[in-house]
Length: 225
Image 1 (cartoon, rainbow, N blue to C red):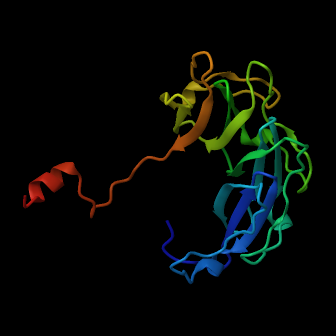
Image 2: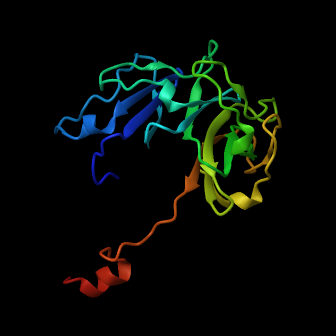
Image 3: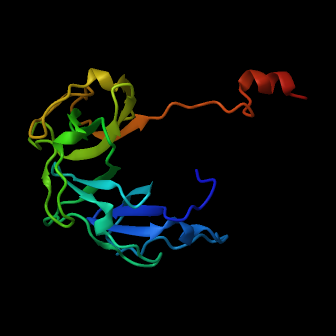
């Protein structure tokens, strides 16, 4: 949620084809009832990542084949809302980008694959390179692992949620996932049955209750029914 459209802040977007785009946050200050165009997309492309930046952050783009590229967002010029963007990562035919992370100053990147395997890797293990290259290995994609489905920034105190295409949902502590080097396969994150695949990985944000919020007990006590 946004409380103000600050100057010198940007919305950074990334698409499945490896395209990235940076637009001034202030460009979205005047809303319309029908919405605003944020990005011009080709018919076969999809938005896979959006975040707010200050113009100085490192961007990490992850592909389904286990590659990642890390570059400073200063390499992407600010564009208007209707622009298509520029190449962020070079993908081969049939490859696609599956996620974008704004690199933290410290912590790890947790990567997960379709067959339920994954790992944590220290953020310092990911080198900063130029924009538009093929990147480096983030996790080894193998017959055991399958393709990468997502990558998220985590710390030791976080929790993650994993969900399969059969509706299996697992919540676990990040500290229970091993920290391993980039060029490794990882460990089992979730046990899947035959034919089941992991489709979602998200870091759990702790919900901080606002003093003005009412919980269920408050609602019961204040109900006029």
